Length: 292
Image (cartoon, rainbow, N blue to C red; front, side, top):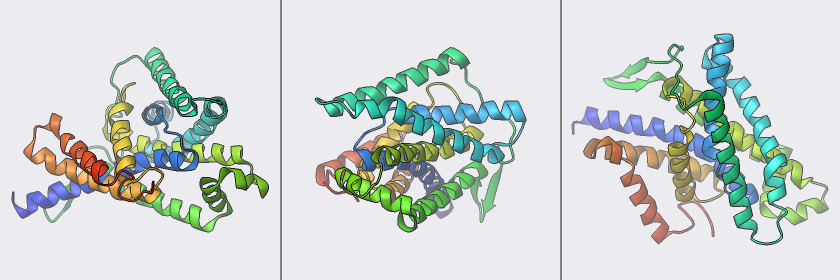
């Protein structure tokens, strides 16, 4: 492999890694806040892609312009998912973990079934956009503009998360609720409100990734599954509940996947990612940046 080819693979891996991190961070945020694994995470990604496609058809506006509207829509959908499903699952007296798993899994099945009913299993795409099909040439390394845009959005999202969690009252309430859900009620913090906002924020973040993916990826009811699987690996690799561990793990997964694709058939490129994950689990079950 030449140096230029290696740089091409590295750049592609880093860009996809940033997108994987953006998909995974909402999952990590929700788990860190509530100890709930959201099995409908991939379906929320799919909903964001369909929302982008639908708004594009209705308004003819570019997905880049539609991003704030889709993100706001996904925030509301996330908060409603908490109030309508997760809140009741958390009230279970026995087998709490299993109840929460089946509640979010059932939500995933419902969303996917509704998507197939209303939109059919047909593949759809946005054929024309400002960024679609365009590349950036840097010293012979070609970077697809949609992935570059997605990488920038991911970095901005993580920077915004840092400021939110470190500099705002909501961030402090979020962190306090993560540390001790019982104690926060004694100081007047509404736990349900924090949880609903946390779910809204987590789903809004995956909504950002959905808008980016809709620019260059096919849209269909099962599109979220493969990305959700990668997101679970990223979260576990970075450490459950570690928001910025998801960023580092996403970059690692993206680079490993890109390097594996150069020596393995494309359909088998994820094998190296799962082998890396298994190795980390055996050596450090809490993940690279998590705590047991």
